[in-house]
Length: 108
Length: 122
Image (tube, rainbow over all chains, first blue to last red; front, side, top):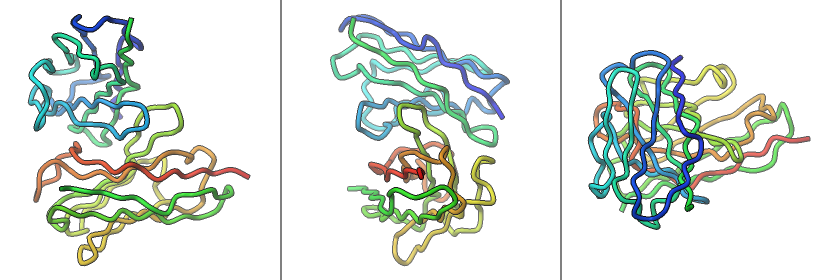
């Protein structure tokens, strides 16, 4: 089973700042089949990125996914107030699919 | 509009059983792989089970294999999760989630329900 380790655990930033979230896999993720989700309190997760770098429908272009192999990054270019949330990475290239433990982006 | 509505959650004693249902609407249910993903209180996401569009392909996480059974009724646009021999560690919010693309299993999900809370406690 591939273990995904997200860092940092918490990111304290101000609106307008750039956020860089890391997702490191315990082994190479087949086909760069990696997704990112955003979850706000009391809500279901929302798909942001799949295939490591493809934005899902209606996702603003301030969200960018990158990486390959075992190292992946989600970058939020300029944080908007609605971006403060928990972010999860998920690999779906190897069975079983697994999620990272999450990175919380909080207002500084 | 795509909608996924879970039901059937509740409080159950260890060793007990519960059946979750997910009512789907707004898309061609029979064309999509469907999934259950759970989230323990204050914790991260854990994939539980998946079932292919025709119900032929079924997968389970090791943590639930042999205890949980996923099924679907394409005529009723419904997904189910039969949970037996429940343990305290099964306590979680159970989400029904739809695969992103139709006719092919992708493994990532662009539509989620609001979840059904399952609490296993004596």
